[in-house]
Image (cartoon, one colour):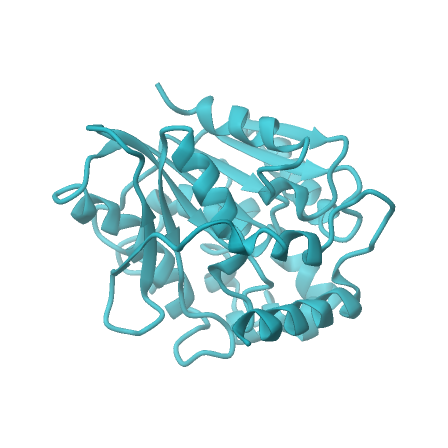
Length: 295
């Protein structure tokens, strides 16, 4: 029943125009077909809210293992959860990389807008330091990776050192990653606001427009925080006509002000979902990007 509900919700996502189906390009249904391939990781809370948890996947062996913190997408909306990112977590685990797959409050959940959603991401990433006391994790080798809206949040996480101590989003002693991999990142919040994407989700997330809350957008929109100070990869699908333009807008804006830490990778056989599908021809590009930030 749960799978049927998720399929119905994600089909509505397709019908809303967020993904343009093309021949041989992966659909949400293709991704859902893999969900029976394994079990969730160990569920561990990083806060008191029921949605403040992660699923930890640890490879076999003694470790310590490098860590990918993964942030799922879904337009920052409550109706999309970490389910479809589990195959990616299993694949990385089998490559000898531990995965901390984050859940967080989203638009539609109590506390799932600014600043709560961002604080969940920050707290969830910082919780890796606590996990390392009980699990063989190497906190010096952490890569933050996210897909779509999660790609935006991964870029933001890489820039957290820039947040001043008197700001709503400040968390002391943040865990700063060795690198960030942003998959199909929905990073250009201003353009997303202008287009009213996902039923004006940016205005709902931020409680208003960039003109109304410039102080908020200054520390949430990655291009406004560039250079973010961490090496990072923006990996986008050539056939992802809905979301690649927003990732490209971030890359262009960041490079224009001299950010030379970005690696732009265009996946020639990818739409929006191949980048999180370990069975796709795009997966080697994703794995290469992750390994490029690990020793």
